[in-house]
Image (cartoon, rainbow over all chains, first blue to last red; front, side, top):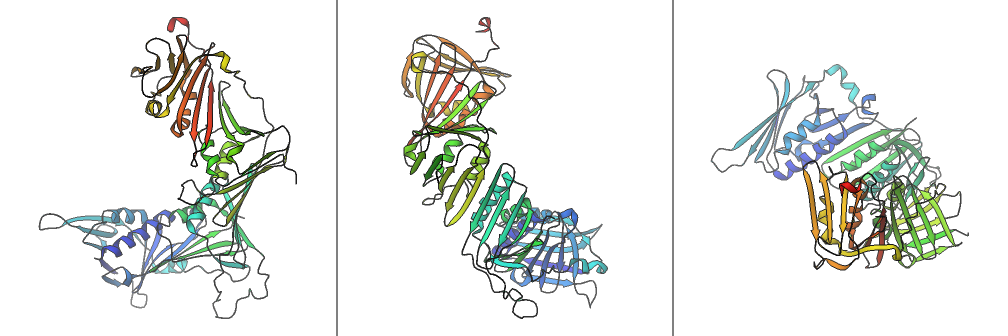
Amino acid sequence: MRFRAKIVDLACLNHFSRIINTIARLAKTCILRLTVCKLYFILSDKVANGGASMWCELSQGNFFDEFQMEGVAAEHNEIYLELVPENLSRALKTSQSAKAVKIKLTNKHCPCLRVTVELPSLSSSSRIVTHDIPVGVIPRRVWNDFREPSVPDFDVSLIYLPVLKTMKSVVERMKNLSNFIVIEANLSGEMNLKIETDLVSVTTHFKDLGNPPWASEDGCQSSTQGRDLESMTEACIDIKKLQQLLAGQQVNPTKALCNIVHKRIVHFILLHEEVSLQYFIPAIA
Amino acid sequence: ERYALSASLDNARHLSSLLRAVPFQDHATCFATASGLRVTVEDAKCIQANAFIQAEIFQEFSVQEESVMFRVSLSVLLDCLTIFGTSSLPGTSTALRMCYRGYGYPLMLFLEEGGVVTVCKINTQEPEELLDFDFCSTKVVNKIILQSEGLREAFAELDMTSEVLQITMSPDKPYFRLSTFGNAGSAHLDYPRDSDLMEAFHCNQTQTNRYKISLLKPSTKALALSCKVSIRTDAQGFLSLQYMIRNEDGQICFVEYYCCPDENITEAEL
């Protein structure tokens, strides 16, 4: 098992740091999966995470100038590591004006990701800051636990999210009033956010959001054909999880959608140019 | 539909920023008459804060009977009024419509910004009797009007280890003095009567009164928003602080605090 990579471009480095910051806000620990072409940050829906799960995918070529990976075996050319993303985020904080950042998998006393930040200095030799981030190597026999989550294609409404800034403000205020929020949407571009307690009920109505075309896995027309476009699918979720997701978006995504599976799960899809982030929040029973 | 109270505001901030000047309590009493809306909070049976928004500030304001009164949670009301956020982007504002059917009904708020509509239904409670400080101009012993900027720093930096804020008003020196008695010692801040900040000075009698500092400290918010403050005391040492606040459109609103003097002091201590 070997892994070493290097980022030299400052814009790529800052973008990578921002992604890690977003991940750190969503997960205390997560899995980093390395393949030849991609990096994945995975949070699986264990009870400890409050049932939320995350799947973030980036193409290494868009960030790294050098990327060498040798997996656990030839037929399984991948590496799965468990780490605390906040540690990686902190290591990258020192890299805002770095000349280069190298990441290497080492095993001196225990497995670590060694992050080496080369900083400019006035003298001829650079300043080097090294962070050793402990990681856990995930054995191949449990790799199946970390597959991309799939979502049923019936009783769903796939819809573009409203302007995130507005959604963020509304959800933050609603968080002061209630622990749970109902999110509902239909195939006519309408979405409502609702909270209800003994003291107050608040509903925010978004219109004209647009529904992306739905393509189910086998490429056929979706089973939403013939369904009443105005009928809503809804799910009641933990408002803190939604607020964390929205607060973590430091840059506006290119595309932001969500898929509400009636009373089951809300699936958020946030696409930036080089990275896709999926976040799944289960409905409260 | 006949509503006991029905009002519209093009800019909800005219209401929300004023309500922020009044300390958060679970219960705020809303009292509406044809002249406008008054929101009152009280604490410990010795301090009362009132925010007045005149009917003229609203684009529409109608009260069916002589007056309408109900109680709501002020923090819930504020969260609803600021549902679209508190930062003010130039050119954007949240429009508000407020409706109240009458006794037993919830307060309905309709807020709109950028085509997004939020509907709030806030449960109301039975109004409770409010304190009456019986503060009228004939009973005022001492009165000064100061420009708020003069007091802001003083109030922001009050020594909170002092249990009381002592206010001295006098026709003679020190004229107007704020004192605290904290762990590090006592601090006195004097304002001379001929100071630029002093807009009016009408002190007839030397009076020194102490007020619980924890009760007065929240008035710092109202002070921060205001351009002028009037400070008045009556023969019993009751204090009235009236803050004149200009909103974004230059319209004037008032916030008023009334406070009882702290009774735990004797003549000997003064």
